[in-house]
Length: 280
Image (cartoon, rainbow, N blue to C red):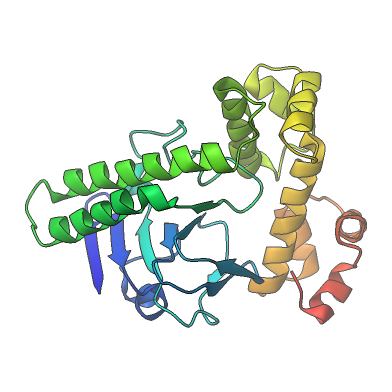
C-alpha cells in the first residue's frame, strides 16, 4: 500500500505507506524528506540509522530527518511510514515544538523513540484509518486536510515525547531552549563552534546553557556541538566519495591536519583508520 500527495507548484510531498522497504524508491522525492516510522507489527523489527542497528518494538515510533542515512536492508516486516518535506508541512510554521524544528525531529541529540501506551493505541489506529480515508477522497482541499491530519499525528507524538524522553525537572520553557539549541547546532555547526555563539542567538548566557544541559543530560553544550561536527564527518566518510581534505574544508576546517587531529580526538581513530574499519 502506497499513497502520495504531491504539489508540483511548490515542490511539496506527503507520502504514506505500510511497507517503506518496498516503496521507498517509488515516491516523487526521497532526498529531503522527514519520516515518521511506526512499527505496527506484533514483533520487533530492525532498521539501520547512520550505520547503527536500531530495534523497534511493537508500537514504537521513531522519527528521522534528511540529515540521517536510513537503511531498511535488515527490516524483515512491513514498516508503516509517513514521509513529508518542509514544503508540505513547514513552510508556514518554522519554529514551534510541533513544526519540522520540533522536539521530535531536531529537539534532542539522541534518536527519539517513543512508545504508544496501550490506552492510546485506539487513538493512533483511528488516525491511521482516517489517513486511509482521506487518500481515497482526492479533491482540491485534500492537501489542507492531510496537513491537518499530519499535524495531529505530530502533536500526539510530541506529547508522548515530552512525557517519555524529556527530563521531568525541566519546565516547558527550558525544554524549548534545549530544542532551539539543537536546531541551531544543526543549522550552524560548520561555522559556529563556541557555546557563546549559540548563547547569543538564544539571548542566554553560556553559563545558563551549561546549567540547563547539566539537568537535561550528561552532555555539555560544547560536547553536543563537537559531536554534531564529528557525526557529519563520519557520515561523509561513510556515505560519500569525498576525500578527507574535501570533508575538512566542507566542515569549516582551514587545515586538513587540524581536522585529522579533531577527528581522532573525537572518535579515537584517524580518518584513514575510520575508513578502513568501515564503522560509524
